[in-house]
Length: 286
Image 1 (cartoon, helix red, strand yellow):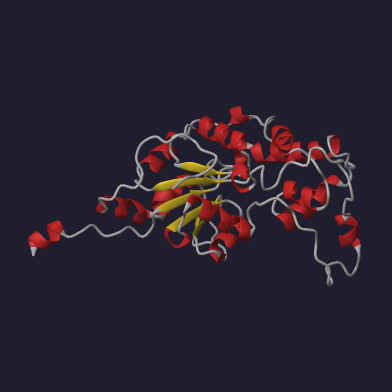
Image 2 (cartoon, one colour):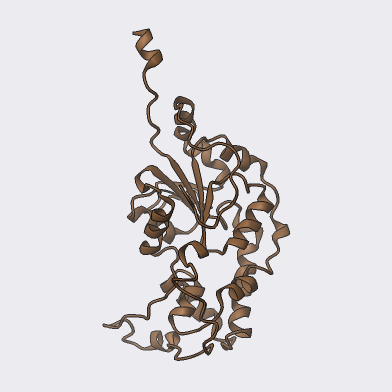
């Protein structure tokens, strides 16, 4: 019996991939980057798209609510702009120096011999800068980002078109008493979380099995979409667990206390799926 136990094949771990959102997940909201990002989005809308400053707050809220990101919403209602220019304006001016190396998180990530992938709506330049500032650039197999889900050939930046051609007045629409009755809002050409289609597409690109993956995100909507497509979900940034979240972490640093089975499985398993340094890639290859 002792001989059989010694040479019995190692039990397969329950999970083989950890999927992480980037902003306000790998670092806290208190860093202030989210606030600066929102300010930059507003400035872009006013300075580059000519949107009245008084309309900007309500417009941002509606677009975020119905399209997942302000950027996706702006494209849906008819604004045309170059995607690289938008990202450069919104992310390029962020105070990245507010982010500091996180050796605790680095140790936690590197102690797990399991695939680790970033899934963000942001662009690849922003993702690389954040990971570099946190000292985590070699902790992940790859990055699923804006360019991954929106390659130039599929949804080219409409930079050669008028900036405000045929804009749908979404503010005026929702100001009507019968708003939403039998009318479908314009669709966006941009793929992004929390769209089910975008998330399923991301998993397909990265060859990720949702049933064997844990998804970490600060956004409740992203978490709920992740749950719908079969991911095991962890909401980061609050200890209050809500519908759609299997776990809730006040900080990503609490990952080991909340999910000790990951380390237990790693110790039992002899099948090391990820080890060592892998360069950051825009497109994830499994």
